Amino acid sequence: MDIIHVDMDAFFAAVEVRDDPGLAGKPLIIGALPHERGVVSTCSYEARKYGVRSAMSIKEAYRRCPHGIYMHPNMRKYKAASGQIHEIWVSYTDIVEYVSLDEGYLDVTGSAHLFGGAKKIGLEIKAKTRKQTGLTCSVGVGYSMMTAKLASEEKKPDGFFEIPNPEFLKNLIVDRSVRIIYGVGEKTAEALQKAGIYTVRDIYANRQAVIRLLGNHGSQIVELADGTDNRRLTPYSDPKSIGKEHTFQQDITDFTYLRDVLLLLAKELSFDIHRKALYCRTVTLKVTYGDMRQITRAKSGDATNRADDIYKNAVSMLDRIDRQPVRLIGISLSGLTRETARQMSLFDADTGEDNEKLDDTLFQLQKRYNIGIIKTGSELKAEKHVNTGD
Image 1 (cartoon, helix red, strand yellow):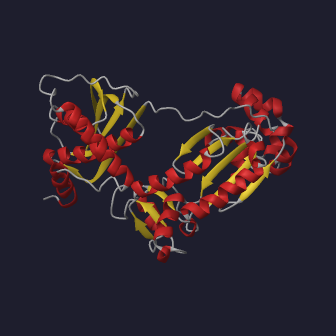
Image 2: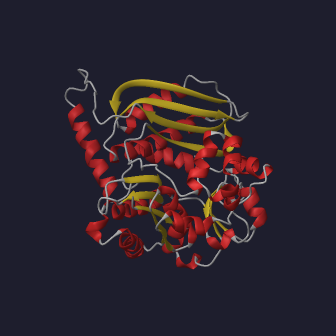
Image 3: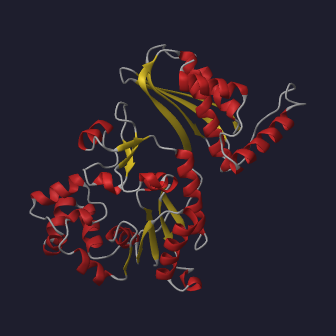
């Protein structure tokens, strides 16, 4: 197989630096602000020198890097850049497994010969990414998913590396920690270390011991260490669900405020599934109270992708829950389908088709210019309430 792994370099932070060159060379932390609840989404390489890393609590990040620049993420901007990146990938193959907005695998086994080989494709992806987005990526080329992933990590950031065969792989990793093997996490590594197995070389010298210790998982680890990885990519398919949630910096007791938050979440979710040409049959409300008790409520009906439908369903469930301080609120959509089964009532007969045409027109404008370019009066009111409390 010819597999390529692409991983953008400090993606969120890199987009911010691209759009504001004054941030270049500075420790930039994207996530919550130091006085807020939350974690680090990503950070620049300058911040990583101080031990800051993704998923670290923002309080710990600030303790390690108090002079850093802290910013909230701008997901709309990152999704736009991700869309450009994904367009580059699919120009080479339709077998793509998306790991996240900024990371994915490409199986170019069947198309490599059309473009001069997998290595040439990898280098072209790097060049096109820089030219079209102003961002850098690390690209790995391998004969399997594990080798492509390892190759992309070998020369980060802005790197390129190729692992052509099992012999090359074994020479590369023989004296590295067992953690370099796919599927060896912290707990598995601890179990191996207790048995005196610290490096890949130790795995080679103690194959049967690894298998006795870990069973089938141990057999897989031995095979991967030998360079055998028969996994196939899972190309993109329609998601089973999609959701958005918001954690408040202080617990909220004002349920009118919560309704406004739901309106804004419903609009973003409507845009997301509309963009994917999907409809949802089930709307689920998620609430975490101030005491960390979590509840969910779900409501199913005709398939829809309209923000108003999503919002009304979510609010109807909100109105029936306990009115206690709320720490987090969210909406998720499931029962996703590409077919709408919306039934018109007598009251919809004259307006339903016009409303759907209006929704489609608004969606096209939002997609072309910006999701926030058009707002209804209720959305403007909700946005003002959420942002200012007024």
